[in-house]
Length: 345
Image (cartoon, rainbow, N blue to C red; front, side, top):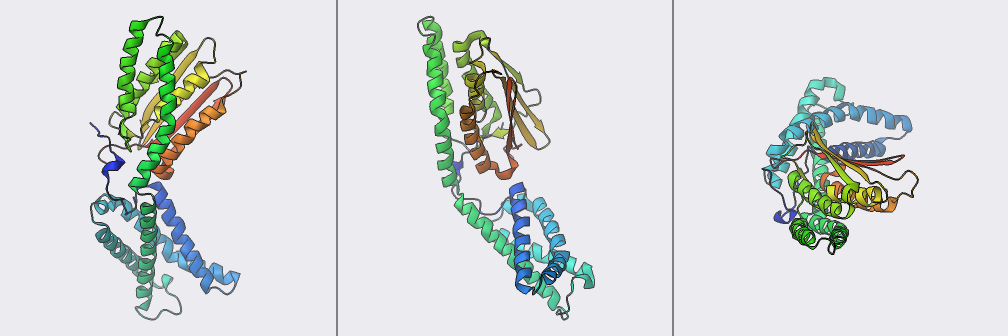
């Protein structure tokens, strides 16, 4: 079974970048090419000279960059096990060897008029070493700026915005039946106690998907006390990976929006559709609900929950997470995509 991972359990930030993260790869490509452009600007006298400098520099730069990124992607698990400075040394040596190997294979293609003998190889290796050290310094600074302590405080603040709504709505659901059916209300309060014990426990970076679904089902059960048959839920979880880990309190706010801004305003109620499935290395969560085609949309409510979720997904997964909102006549749908993560990652 996957285990929840608490960011409070991490004492020091992971200073080495995750070379399997799309955001890291994109930043590396952009920064390296920006450095190359800056160097070319300092050496060029005219615009045509600038283009020539860029063309000459890219001939070796791009093969080295792409080859290095592929190697770092493959070696990422091994590098993550090394102390930071050892990993840095390994990376610098690796990039130097890649540069030298491609430089030798390229022959005179990568040689300039000013290069004499072996100085060409030394110059290219030193340039590569300087660039990779600058990149690693940038990622180290970024990791320190987004340290686990800061992440923990940010996640707590974002989750705190969700919990008051969760609490007040659930209490109102129980109050709606307390006089008509005291015994049922007592049972509901016991269930709610278990529900909030889970929801208000120590915030984790990632939790088991099964626990998040259990939380969502308990929430919907409380809402059904108030709405009765008007609230129906269709769960499509046949392709759900049971070993997945996801950020906490992602699914419940979407369901809360679906209930209060979709089902509740409708006289006859409706069906909330929940679909959770995996495609390759991506986990998809979709929540759709009917809305009144003539009523005024509650965009503010939808945007608040989605804003909270977007910030947390960005904090945890960078550009690898995404969400899409589709509003049609009489229907509202939210589609969240995050990396498929298990306890082995």
